[in-house]
Length: 259
Image (cartoon, rainbow, N blue to C red; front, top):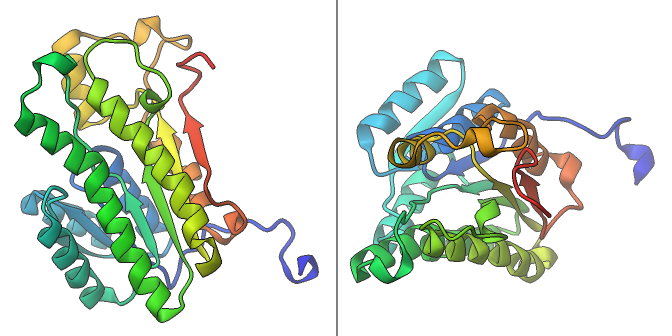
């Protein structure tokens, strides 16, 4: 087999792929949608804010890419499944799923009301699980290979006690979901991997900075990450070069957390 592969076996050309990215209306998800479109994939940006989706589609098309926006509420099962069906109607079988949507809790565990608990769990863990299963069902039925990339967080590996306990729990769940679904669907040639950033600039992070102030000075490199620093990891996990990689969560934290 190795004789049939290029030297080196690395390519970011995603021509012919169809990618669905959740949480694409801002931050890392917005960047990811543009990156995959620039690599040649047809992109479906998903999120709750229709005007932001329209802006994203306009940006991608201005760059020469192909995209549509689909409204999906990750707390609503009917919205998830209906949105997935709408997305496939636009471009055909979705071969790449990026589970990026997430919300913070930003409260001490004992101060959270039940509505907020439900919203964080549904958006960060239950919704991605439902969407992953929906994606896999369709790939398996069509006997098509595919890729799923789940955005976890370094907070799933360590928690400093400053008011994001449930967020940390859900992100640990995303990491474990990645590992077990990779095993479940390996026989179907569906690769399931993840990325675990730490403190990267995003709409969510910038809101936290407004509340608690800039803490980048306490980081070893005295900086927060930027979404562009995740591009290469995303493209690697979406590309043929990572064909044998599944069940792996790549930590991208700029050395911000101790091991």
